[in-house]
Image (cartoon, rainbow, N blue to C red; front, side, top):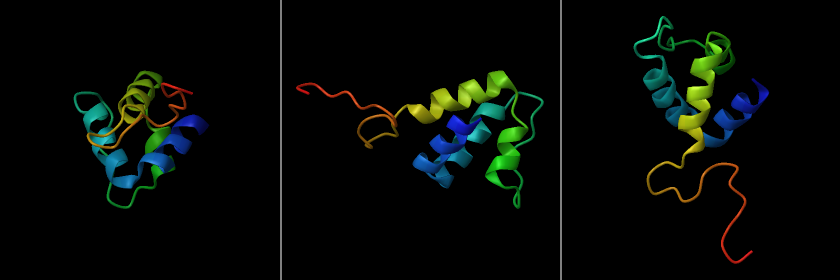
Length: 76
């Protein structure tokens, strides 16, 4: 859970909200509420949903460059 919280801090709230809604769609998990804090939303996730959210957030956003946590680069 700590890794996911850190990852959310790196990608930003807007991207997290979009990814969270996409991940929970079709599951028994409700979308994020208006006044709900990030930590509260994360605690409601199942293990499978949390893994899926990590996968979605770890992939770079279109036009953003490399993935979060990706430290290897050619020529290093």
